Length: 147
Image (cartoon, rainbow, N blue to C red):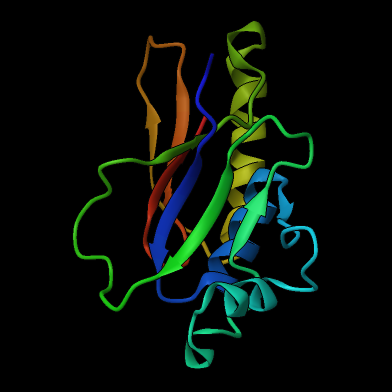
């Protein structure tokens, strides 16, 4: 049986990244645990100091329950190196669709995410290969691909 897990992304501004990635992945904010009106109420109950609260949205979930929860954890240091792990957003319908159709879907997603603060890095397209992808960075510089 598969193990339940969440993905944790270190960041400076959890609200910014939670809103960006919720839009990128069609996720939504994760509701607080049962019995708590907010995540701040939950963390107060755990014993987290007041000065570390009021982060707003800091975790998102797949509304269909298929993907992992993603928690955006505040850390003091900024990103300094290339990611050792990155997300691939599957915007196309895979190789069952013609490359021109896949390219159009990928470009539409890249344009939408650029409008939300992502930065386009480069395009993966090699003559003779049936592959098309776009590499980007989220608003805090984390790399991801759209394919």
